[in-house]
Image (cartoon, rainbow, N blue to C red; front, side):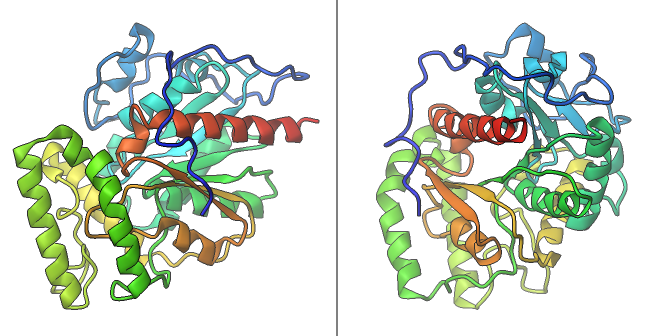
Length: 358
């Protein structure tokens, strides 16, 4: 595995510090239409310390909204064609708002950051989100309409990384120039990795304990409720493992996400979408991908489970580069850990577009 970006974590004195934009000849691309400042993405939670110009992005979208692309930072909202754009697919929640706020703000003065969200209007459709390929097709149509020509760089967080992979495969088949797929701590299932009984798996789990004690979200929050929920979750996972089941696999067949994610925070329509999408993850069989993939893997795993993100990607993408980021799956998207991720991502985006327009 590649060295982690930063030692423990980077400290950003000014999260939105000024970054000089390299000189380029002409615009990087000309969108088919500029994003509207009145667009509000659906988000799962509220946030603080948001600029007044961005605050409207994080109100819950109208149920009638069918928008896929959402401008997350100021550059994207202004439609600055002189800057490269990065398109990032939502996590399992379907939201493209607060998950991406911190990283988008750090890229604001050099990169236009767009989130791809599951349109709230379509979440009400019981078939929407039932397959990775179907979501990739829907998002791809919206992306190509928005940017009909020029190089593209896409990625995704959590399950969004798998959707982005399928989109990249289809874009390449269309003849589009596609940069490295950015996979932020997410990997396809149905890939043979280390068994939970393999000695190396147990060794990796043991090495994770000190990091978990220092950096885990649970240990940082010191919440009794979180502690009880986490312990019960791990106890059930151990029991399922003893029966040869995956930690999210149900006894009667199928998969359920409620043992690793608290769905009570979401409205019923969104909960249904989350469960459909989570089930779709286990029905998706990824093909080998010949292009570049940059995998940002959280170096702090759950206490009794090793996700094996990097190992999974190496199985299907020979050109995958694994970059370890100190923090948990959730923590790497927030302070203080997100600085390392954002700094490395900025460099890769600039490198790709500089080479594309030489």
